[in-house]
Length: 230
Ligand SMILES: Nc1ncnc2c1ncn2[C@@H]1O[C@H](COP(=O)(O)OP(=O)(O)OP(=O)(O)O)[C@@H](O)[C@H]1O
Image (cartoon, rainbow, N blue to C red; front, side):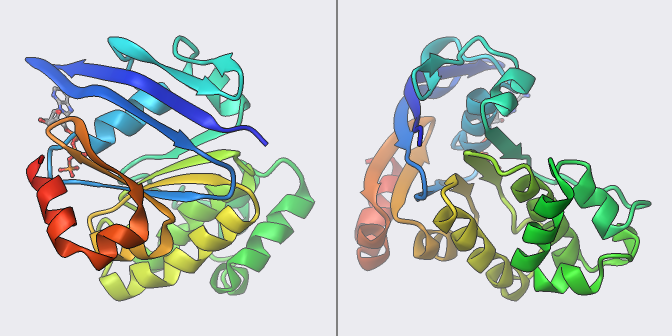
């Protein structure tokens, strides 16, 4: 299976660069937690990888293909999915209808519902009637239904209580176990590091830590220093 490689990525927004010379690799089946202070550039980095914004320098490769100038749709065809911050369900459609929008086959819908037993029970409910946590599950399930090779997830916990968010994490782990490479941006740093194998800390647009996630969990001083940019 292919890896996604980011090299020397620089993104300019407004007055200047908000991402500077960032590089990392997403490997199949691995979860990378991307954490850092507010305004560090995490969302901008995801947007440059998925093609929402164009970088001013650097490259994004999917396997051997340089996708830096590819449209978002072209990247999606190569297996790159991006769940953006605040991404919503289609409220008037049932859970099943929401999933059918991205699933390639009816069998894929059934597979995804097996991953989300909570949704199976509500499959014929309009998505608007689900709780916030269940709606976020629909958003995740819709992304998984497309069986992406690479999945960028931006603050899945937004608006959710930590206890609800905790219920979503095992699904992310199962999806990685099925081969998806995942980049997980999260405000709940410790929860994200807890499910990830790799970690990237970004501070003021630069990578200040790249390596083992467990090391950051074990060393609050290292995490703190990376947040401060040292
Ligand atoms: N559309 C935009 N135009 C100009 N500047 C922007 C735009 N979007 C973001 N920025 C700026 O880019 C910088 C990085 O923002 P970004 O949202 O990528 O950071 P973040 O790490 O995701 O932050 P948070 O954790 O608060 O969501 C910030 O200084 C922000 O003000």
